[in-house]
Length: 81
Image (cartoon, rainbow, N blue to C red; front, top):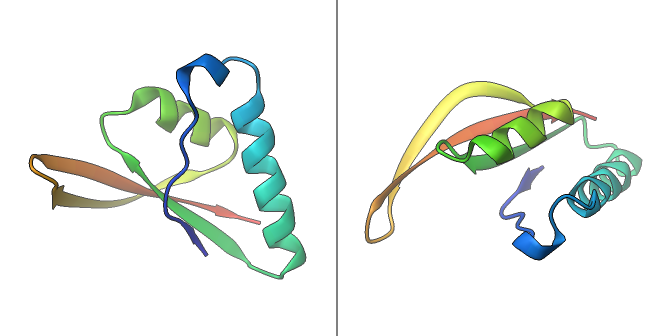
């Protein structure tokens, strides 16, 4: 299972809403017998990387670049559930 996008407006950050949303999604996925979940995160987004690592995600070392008018680099993280 892969999350395609997971964003939170700045005004909702620091209220643990993002954590609760992700924990809810992970709990639902675990009841569906998904063994692992993966997500892409912008390699430059240190706050998001820290957030996912705190929740038990690991950097796989897989990196991709996409041209969306400019080159963006993303890293792939996974978590056993």
